[in-house]
Amino acid sequence: MEQTGAEAIRGTGKQPSSLRTEGMKRKERGVLQEWAVAIKRDKWLYVLAAPGLLFFLIFKYFPIWGLALAFKDYSPWSGFWASDWVGFKYFQEFFSNPDFWMLFRNTMGISFMNIIFFFPMPIVLALLLNEVRGMLFKRFVQTVVYLPHFLSWVVIVGICYLLFSQGTGVVNQLITESGGKSIPFLTDPSSFWLMLTAQSIWKEAGWGTIIFLAALTGINQELYEAAQIDGANRWKQMLNVTLPGIRSTIIVLFILRLGQVMEVGFEQIYLMASAPVSHVADVFDTYVYRVGILNGRFGYATVVGVFKSVVGLILVVGGNRLAKRFGEEGLY
Image (cartoon, rainbow, N blue to C red; front, side, top):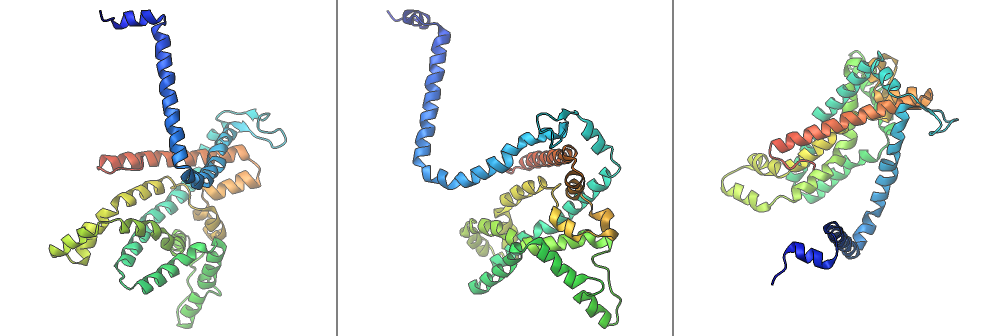
């Protein structure tokens, strides 16, 4: 006679819970064995990825414990663990600070200027380079537009001062010699954000084309041949084949860019800031340097970092959900 499941379990002398535990252990051993086989098979890929993983672990994940400083009255003399807990005291002080809305306005204004004007420029530049047929000329242009990326912001800002200073700038000298009046390019609050955006475009737009050019190479060339048969010119091919082919790349990079909305660059703004434009140049990054580093208020400065991270996280999650709602893959 065949035994039922309950009789078979009683025949083994083991309880059902112990059998389930053994089954789970067996399953875990199977998963661990699969991981071991995968690691052994792709060991050189893991070795290649090790420096990048170590970078993120050391500089991105391990420092997360430092967020606890936002809830402590941190003193270097007392140390991290001995410093007193203050709860949400610094959060209340930060959000009730009269400068908060000015900092928020400046940071968001500069960031949205970058999104509107800077973010599309690498896409446009990649599309233009993709239309160039002469390889020698194409490589020359790529080299020229890549070079500013390797210059520091000190050099970039120095060049801008040489060109646009009101007294000795080359541009203003040409204007005055032509009978015009010098223009305060660097001290005009109404054009300060635009100047920062123009600098970012000049420095980083060429470097940003690398990802989009790589995405363009993945487009099936048969789609272009089919479009040509249908009578599509180069413009229509770009609209109906090229842009849809890199749309997913554009969306992923846009979502990542949303996560950096509160990061507008300390070095560039610190070097460009001056007294006439201080009310439009002061952002969260410069505020952290002034209050956190110079005044030694490390706990208070950490609150600003936490706020920036939370805003970036909300925008990334929201942008990803919105992309999926419109049928795109999104970031995750």
